Amino acid sequence: MERSPMGDLRCPWSAISSAKVGSVMLPVDGWAERRRVMHQLLSGTAMTKYAEYQKEESMVLLSSYLRKPQEWFAHNARYANSVIYRITFGKKPEAGGNAMKNVTKAQFLFLLNAPPYNFWDCFPGLVELPKFLQWWRGTFERAGKFTHDAYFEYYSPIKRNILEGKAPQSFARDVLLGQAKYQGSDTDKISGHLKARADLDRVCGADAARLPDFGDEESLPYINAFAKEILRWRRIFVWTPEHTLTENLEFEGYYFPRGTSFVINHASISENPDYFEDPLSFKPERWLDGNETDLAAGSWQFGGGRRPCVGYKLAQKSIFINLSKLFYCFDFEEREPFDDKTIQHFTMGVPFPINVRSRGAKWTELIERSP
Image: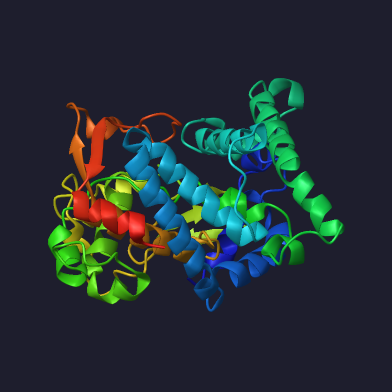
């Protein structure tokens, strides 16, 4: 940790693709103040204010599963976007419209331009070449322009309402417009099928007595362990954004000059038998170590050093409440054989073929009568 300030920089290509305004990819001088503000928003006592949003949106999620179970993947995405939107802007998002669709597309562009899906991010020195030799640069610039335009269209009406005094109390009104929306809504989608129903039945009743709640978290460590195993077993990112040295570094006999970029190779770490016994198997039990509620403990999916994802605690709460409710109330089964090594994370369609149905009439009634 004493070396963490040396690796605060980001690779220049990613800054281009986010139009040089996204906090995730900003250089240190532009990032530090935004990070301080974002930390106030997404950690500590501020988190307690958002529990009601998460509970309300989780009920919308359950109702959506009942009405249109075949669109389960879209319901998960809607939940993630809605929670971040409500935290940022203080109200529920409007359904449909090109603005939301373009923002969602911009999120996918960001993920698809993340390393190692492009080789140039692996060689940041290429940015020193004359621009006419950087034949790949146009890809980043087009992505940056589309992202800028998508978010401008998205938040311009909100900004107008803020300036006219018509907007509700919100983070955006007080501090900034749109940043949190970008940084969390795609990376806290859930996946997989929880098999710890016995724990849920023990805590909430085997006869649909009540829905799980945040107060059950200490009694349901296996739920959080399951979430951490999902992130290890089928990680969202192969790499997280690069960290670039601000000064020369000597480490274990190796010399790295200033400007060297490092990445966290999640594939290598999560499948390394030196770190995880039988790494190709899905075993939530490996995370039952007393740190189940800390999503970042032992996991690198949210980054490291001084620039981890500031919203990981919010993501942990969302994953917990939704895994608990979904797998208490619904059955998930494979519709046809598929290769779980080729799950399509970055798709707006069906990522893998499963059927979803209510666990039974009692659970359907529980969802329908719950506020």
